[in-house]
Image 1 (spheres, rainbow, N blue to C red):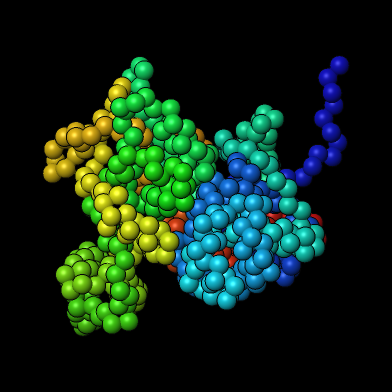
Image 2: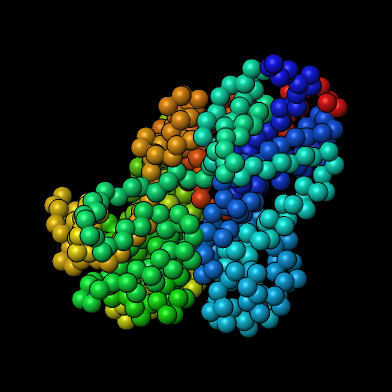
Length: 527
């Protein structure tokens, strides 16, 4: 006899958040604040958070997968918005003794603690490049406390990977999640896509029979610590005479994180042979330490471009050309690339409003990202390791673009330079992919691919983000947070790049207000 359907099925959630990293967590915190202030129009707020990793409210960058030696890439003074910075600083002070003891429960590098013990004791926190896991631990505790302190808020969690999004019968949305226990369906009136960046670009390679080489497609597939363990095991198992060289493809923040992790793994670093990084632009200027001259640097080319009268029609391409000329001139005069950042950011920010709407669109989809390459933060411990290894000859940077790799006797890597393909002279025991992100045209993320193929959402002109309206909506009831907002220009958003934690947090209040308005519009007050 068939089972009767329940008479009073559970109502759909007000919101399901896909992704509990910094973007999803900051949006949740702002929605909770809106609810406490009565702006959701109801007494009860039902939210489900879906996260595929164990790092709930920390995500990949600040959770266990980041690694014990992984650090925030800016000082504390540039990392967070003011209010959250103050709370994190208080948390660090309250946990000072636990940090100084390198408590295993914190999962941080004992070497980092030893290097910075005096700064920690003397409360010199502002310019420290702190372990990412400390911020992840703080943020998770902070978020759980805010949930508990919000009357009427019910926040459920589902651990699993989002696989499909479909319209529900009531006009809301049904999210299908693949969990360890099988498929789970979550129904909600609205959805927030806080998916982070698309996956890394895939690098073509062929593995022959009996191969002794290891090709790492994703340095964070498990965790940076797991990758270090894998390298340790691989090098220990190599036969005599086999290559022990390691090639890192890409000079991204992930590459620096890996180099720093190798430095902290004192038993592993001596087992490595040659250590090389392959990148199109050659050695990044930010990998070498130079005297800090930011206070004295003054722009020539961008300043002259900005000094033109209002009758001059400025262009995004003209801004890029001026920035590139300024950086080239600054390097020739002995400045570091990072010395130019405050001045060029100030001038570029002032020029954006002088661009026509069409030129602003060009800036957020192309030139803004190219200009951003001149202002990527690198400093502190990461920079010191790269600088020392470059000076000692321990690290070599090879200019060129990765083309292919094959085995069996270690990896033979083919590189493209000056439109010509040529094999590198040495073979590699390990190749690690630290290249940039995929575009949305070629992403192989199953959930993101399904959303695009079903035309539930569309890529914007940058091909790096989803098109949204002025209220962060990619479709009715579907909102976007975090890096996938890149490439949007409308009445409230002008975003070309969104990897900065501080900027994601700064945008969260407006997103929280949009989510609260959507909740309030869904049902009468007091529902």
